[in-house]
Image 1 (spheres, helix red, strand yellow):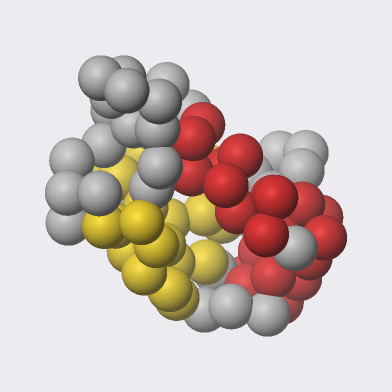
Image 2 (tube, rainbow, N blue to C red):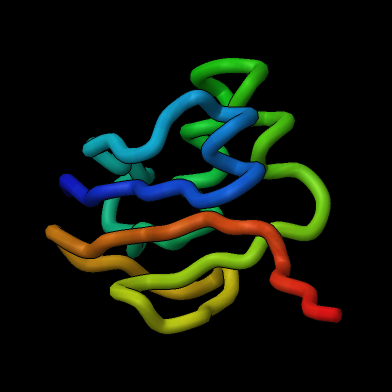
Length: 86
């Protein structure tokens, strides 16, 4: 299943990837989740592992969500650090 991954702020700087399309691979009839995307990306490169560790927010199609969120073909997944203000 093909999805688009976007990164913002520190996750973009560390991953060195503003956007990419990936084919999410899952076992048999299982539904793909954001956790599957994270596992796939962190296995690609140590930069991804650093970018996605700790407190990173996720969004599916511009709606905040968690790592158990189920994905559909064509979805957009975004990763970004928590926003703080002052």
